[in-house]
Length: 28
Image (tube, rainbow, N blue to C red):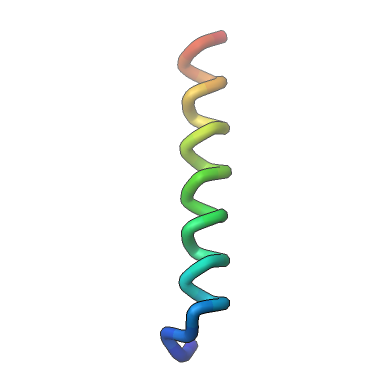
């Protein structure tokens, strides 16, 4: 995978989704 802005954005969004998911698991 080339480090294009789009791929970086996708990785960032994926990281945010995982973080939110883990936060919800810890909160509940």
